[in-house]
Length: 316
Image (cartoon, rainbow, N blue to C red; front, side, top):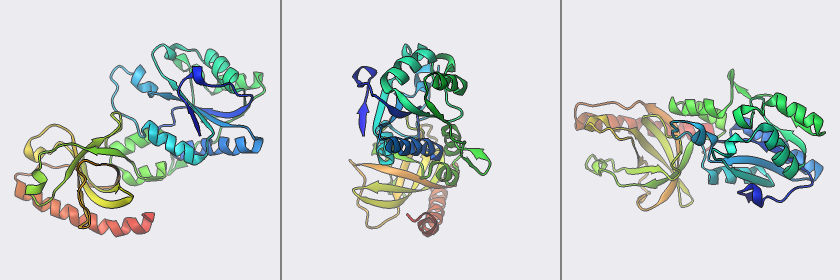
C-alpha cells in the first residue's frame, strides 16, 4: 500500500475506485465501504484509494478540542493495509484547507488527481467548506462526470446505526461489549509507561502507570476493567484502574494496570498495546486503604472468573 502525505506529491491516476473520509476507528460500517472499493478495484484492475485527513478536522475546527481519536494514524494505516487498499492520500487539514469549497475539492482533487470510475461513501458523508459536499452534491457531480456512485446501506446493530460517534459514546459509558460489536474488536491503544506513586507495591498489587503514545487518543471512562496487554509477542490479562483515585484525594486522571500472571516480569521501560475487555465497576472512594485493598481483592476475583468466559466467547 502506497501512502502519500501531500496533494503536491500525488501522481495523477488514469482511473481509480475511491472513497473519502476520516475513517476513525475503522468500524464495521467503514469495513463495508473499504472492502467494496478493494473488490471493485481488483475487478476493474485499477487502484483502490482513500483520501483522508490529518489531523482530524475536529481538532482544527473546534473551539475547545479534546481527545476523541479512536485509532492513531499508524494503527489506521496498518488496518487499511490489511484490508487491501492500494493507495492512501493523507491531506494535511489546516484552517486554510477547511475553506476549500466542495466544488473545488471535487474538481481539483477527486476528478483531476484520481479520475475515478467509482466513488463509494456512506449516506451521512460530506466534505468541503460548510459541509457543502453532501450526498446530493456527489450525485450531481457523479452524473455529470460519468462516475458510478456507490452508497451502501447503513449497518445497524440492535437498532442503532454504527458510527464513530456512537462508538465514542459507548467507550465513555464503559460499554465494552457493545464497543466490540460495533468495532469488530475490543477498544485499545498503544501505551507507554510513566512514573507513578508506587503505592500499588505497598498494597501487594504492583501496577504500572501508563498513557497512550498518541496524545489525542480517546480515554476510557473511570472505573475498573478486565484488560489485556500485548507485549513482545505475548498477551496477558490484567486488571486496570482508570480514574482520579478518590480514596487518596487525588484529582489527576491516571491509568494503571496490574498483570494477572505469575509468569510476567514487568512493563517498565517498555511500550505495549492494551485492550479494555470489560468494565467491572465504577470508581469509588473508600474510607481507608484497608477497605480499598479488600475491594481490589474482590475485583481480582471477578476478573479471574471472567477470563475463561472471554477466552471461550471471543476466542482470545
